[in-house]
Amino acid sequence: MQATTHMKRRSDGRISIKSGNEVQLIMQLTILILTVLTVLAFLFFDYTGLDIQRAIQETAYNLKVMFLEPALSHFGWGEAIYQVGITLGLAFLSTILGAVLSFFLALSAATNLTNEWITKIVRIFLAFIRAVPTVLWVLIFAIAAGLGSEAAVLGMLFHSIAYLVKAFSEAFEEVDKGIIEALRATGAGWWHIVVHAILPSTFTYLMSWTFLRFEINFAVAVAMGAAAGAGGIGFELFMASSFYFDLREVGMITYMILVLAIILEVISTLLKNRYFPASIKN
Amino acid sequence: MNENRIRYKKNQQMIIVVLLLALVTYLSSVLTDFNILHGLATLPEAFIWIFSNLVVTEESLERMPTILDKLVETILMSIAATTTATILSLFLGVMGSKSVGTSKLLGILARFIASLSRNIPVVAWALILLLSFGQNSLTGYLALFVGSVGFLTRAFIEVIDESSQSAVEALQATGATYIQIIMKAVIPECLPQIISWILFMIETNIRNATLVGILTGTGIGYTFDLYYKTLNYHGVALVTVSIVVAVILIELLSNHVRKVIL
Image (cartoon, rainbow over all chains, first blue to last red; front, side, top):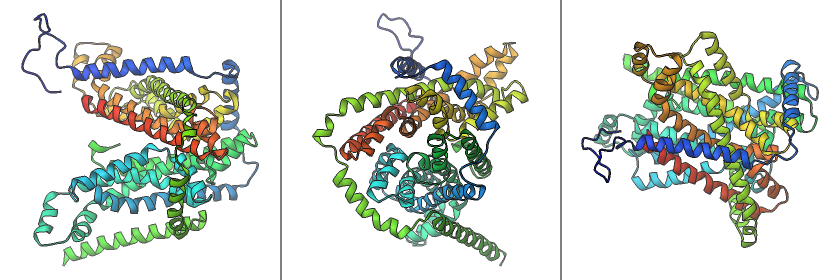
């Protein structure tokens, strides 16, 4: 958005008062295209077997039963806590393994620590990983590596790495150039610089990002339990709604997930406000 | 002397954190029956399997029209969910913002709605809606819509609260009404950021749509599930490749838009 000093003229010589406003044009175009696509979407939707009025009434009733009369019926509280533990465990494992691997990958993706083409290769690789939805990674690993927690953790690991490498390498790039130069001047090797300059000055920051990813991974672990049979509370949620049609149990499980998700969100908001500058919040 | 002690203390803290993490890692692996050595050992085999089985063959290319059809449906569903959620989220965002919000009570209400729809997982919404809406596009659309409202509202509240207040003050000084201030100062000021978040949400929703599709039997997720369950791995490969291409194309496009407007 730089102010242009010269005047643009139209072909007939008149001054174009809309000149230099590519930004406005692109924004209007984006909104227009999205609106058109939205209208198209509603026209092309497949509405088979839908009775909208009945569906809304039923959903309202279901929601009422779920949230006002929650109860466990197919398993007890001990089992419920155990299943929540499994979900938390899956989320934790994929986060911590992801963080360790991301640390090394991020070192090779940070522009101030390696040369340009390694950075580029790593970034392209990560873009590919991100493009495949997590559930597909988990399902593909489930057939390739056999069912079980390994497939779930490996699948979730991929997106954790893609997310954390980006965050970590940006943190590394912000390390004061002076510190690195000073160490280089004393003849310190690459590993010395990493251990004595990069790691100490970014440690709390890295931990905060890792926790933010843990918050996301908890939700992902619930989803993987439901859609990819990864076990945990997500799988119980799927069973309760698709096999037992037990709305009260669905309600109780939803409450459990909700409470945990809100606790995690509160902690990560606190971490964000404490350790992150206002400019890079998301 | 003093400096040494500080350094010693800092090192000690780091060691405690690392030990604690190691302990939790151990507990989690016991709980989930996860064996990292076994996981690593199967990894090469897994990749060999992927590269030898998940290949697109000419035979599977015949299914391309069906897949493309479902892919377009999924993308349209994600876009529709995002744009309609944006309209609601803008209201909630203005209500929930500290700088231009109307009343404290409405602000709390907006934040509460956003938190509820964000923290109840999309999976739960999908399963609940599936019970009464049945297996059609609207179920997937609604599940994505609810999740997007929560996420976008939080983003919009942050954007509005961080934007400059000078335009708002200038309009207030002229005696403009509340609606005028929102429409002519707040929204235009935040529009680039808002569009950037919308684009981000569309990208996220396309990935989520696959997940929702597997659960609700709609869109590309259903196609994937169908091939997956009938062990048609060439079909699985083709669906995966088309999702990857679609996501990367949309990401490139929105990165381009972002570069111009931000």
